[in-house]
Every structure is written in C-alpha cells, then in structure tokens.
Length: 93
Image 1 (cartoon, rainbow, N blue to C red):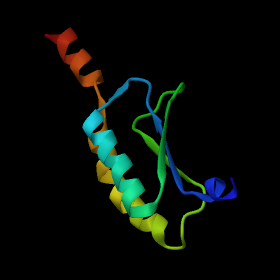
Image 2 (image 1 turned 120 degrees about the horizontal axis):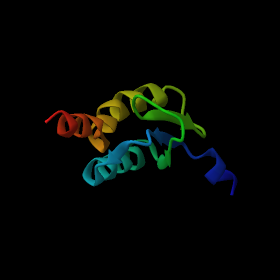
Image 3 (image 1 turned 90 degrees about the vertical axis):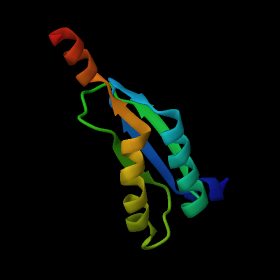
C-alpha cells in the first residue's frame, strides 16, 4: 500500500467543453507508464478552463518531473481537443 502512495501520478483536469482523443490519451498513458512508472488520472473540470491542467502528484524521482513535463506537454495537445471553434463556425455559417 505504501508503494502505491509513492507512485508518481499525473492528474489532468480537462475543461468541460473539451473532448478526449482516444489515441492521444493512450499515447500519454503509455509514455507516463513506460518512461516514468507513472499513472494517469483524468477529471472533468466544473469551472471554466482555457486548456487541460496537468498536476504532478505522488513521488517523482529528483529531476524526472522536468523531463516528464517536456514529454507531457505535446502529448496533452494530442490527447484533448477543444470543439468550441466548430460550434462557433457552424453558428456563423
């Protein structure tokens, strides 16, 4: 039980009006597990957010969080999409 508490976790708060891209989420989950032994937790925001918010929890080996942030940032862009632009385009058209 103690080892589970110390495991690194990436908690991503996803804006309410954003949708997941299953392939992108799978790649993010794979990268975290393979490279850092970390797990991924997703939660839907109830307050407005402009983009997904990554929160690093648990114990990350010294120095690894910097590398994780470097790897996570582009994968977050591939894992979630904001569809508000589509709604605005449809209303304008």
